[in-house]
Length: 135
Image 1 (cartoon, rainbow, N blue to C red):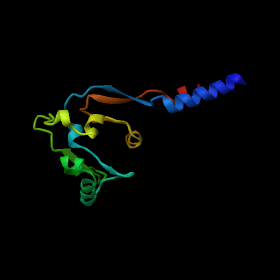
Image 2: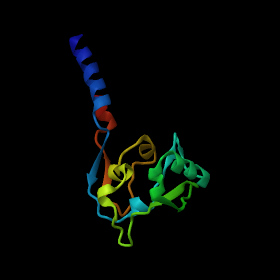
Image 3: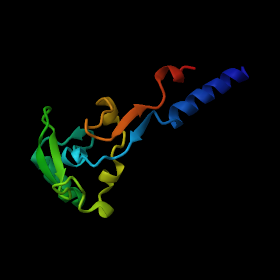
Image 4: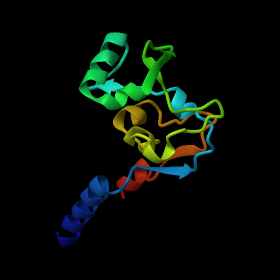
């Protein structure tokens, strides 16, 4: 009985407090994360310029980005205005929280396949396989 309770406690502790993903590697300054930014409003991707204008009114930090185009799914892509022609940040010390957190694993990234850009030095790896949670 005690062992069974302990196993349940161990299972739930690991489930809730163990990181499911780990980030390996380091930035190789390719600039792709600065040129292909996607923003969200609530649970939806920003797909219209009107939505982006609303974001800029809501929070001034969005004024640091320009619309760079759309991806194949119709989601707007943004480019940071601080990126220079050599893919270096001109405002590195004062860069936004968004930039500091990259690559932060969110549910949207996880559901999208947990992939970084091909040229990115960061890779997202699964920290714990599903079958290990069953033990």
